[in-house]
Amino acid sequence: MTRRVSIVTPVHDTALQFLPEAFASLRAQELPDGWVWEWLVQVDGGKEAEVPAKIRDDARVQVGANRRGGPGVTRTMAWGRSRGELVKVLDADDILPAGALARDIEVLDAHPSVGWTVCKVLDLMPDGSLQHYTLGDPAPGLMARGELYAYWSTTHRPSVHPASLCIRESLLAEAGGWMALPASEDTALLLALDVMADGWFIGEAGLHYRKHPGQTTAHPSHSDGAEWEARMGAIRRHAEALALRHRPTT
Image 1 (tube, rainbow, N blue to C red):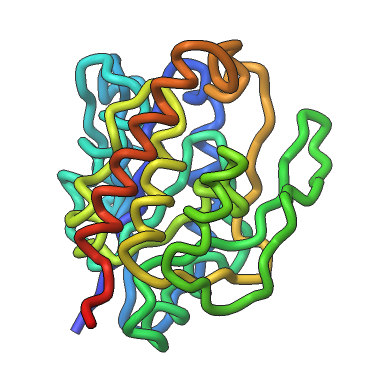
Image 2: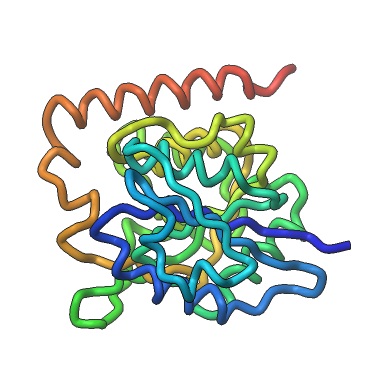
């Protein structure tokens, strides 16, 4: 029986130029026996034809477009077209190093109670160098439910990188996909997953996260002001509501 992992990639104007490199990194992935991948590329506020023909012509790639809605809406629209039992996040400007998908699949196959994985991330700098992204990586292995939310509640920063998520599709559906936020929608999902199920940290680098001026995190409202406060409030309310629903019964 063929099993499938769905890679979800939102695309906006400034990231379109990097899409061929993301595609090349995906094509180079070697998956465990019986597994295949599909790539759901979703153009935010544009047209499918903006995606290079070399990418669109690959039968494993499904390209869609939506009205301008921002990253959360665009990710959710891509997920809505997916068919995989696992959903992997890959931003258009990022790169998957060798073995990244296989490690996600192997962990989730070996640990049925684990709902999601994240991994060590390396920042891909404009000069092509790689630097370790970290707020203090946890030890590789199980991350107990609620651990990340407890840290975020005092820092308003995730201790692991949400751009490296791989998720069981059933859990993503229960979380409701990505929140319709102008930014931090990936952090919102990470925290929602954390209060719902145990996760797993993979100690090998599974993402090269590109740093460039056009990314959403470079916007002046990303980490300060009224918009930031509203985003943090929405993320907190969503996570706390899910935590109540998933509270252990005695």
